[in-house]
Length: 72
Image (cartoon, rainbow, N blue to C red; front, side, top):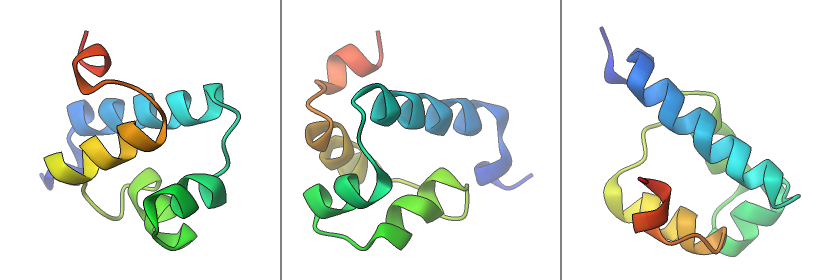
């Protein structure tokens, strides 16, 4: 099974989506904060692209969430 389809990874990405939406932030706004195209955010959220730990930190910074709080 591809790690993109692992239920744990899918839950992890769903949590990121929920956090983005709770901040009333669109994919376009998040992408702009990350200095990436909107398609980058869409690919991650659609399980077409994996996030590495550095990208996760950038993503959480853009959402104004501390990485330690994300994992608690």
